Length: 102
Image (cartoon, rainbow, N blue to C red; front, side, top):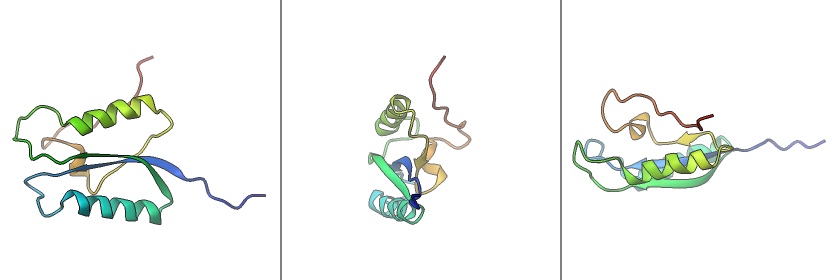
C-alpha cells in the first residue's frame, strides 16, 4: 500500500499593478511558490503580466493566455495568486468562468 499523497496541480498568475507596487512580481512568485510547496501543490505553469497598463486598457495578455491554457488542460483546475486582487482587473469585476461549452 502506498503512503504517498496525491499532488494537486495548479497554474500561478502574477500581475504587477500601480496600486500594489510594493508587491512586485518576484515577491508574488516567492509567496505563491512557498505556499504551493507547503501545501503539496505542483505549479505546472506560471503566467505574469508585468506591464503597468493604464486603467481601461485592453485585457491583460498573460491573463488571457492563462484562461486559454486552462481551457485546453481540463485536468488543471486551480489558479494560485498572491491575493485575489490579481484575478480581477477592475473593482467589482465578476468571477472568472473557466470551462468548455457542451
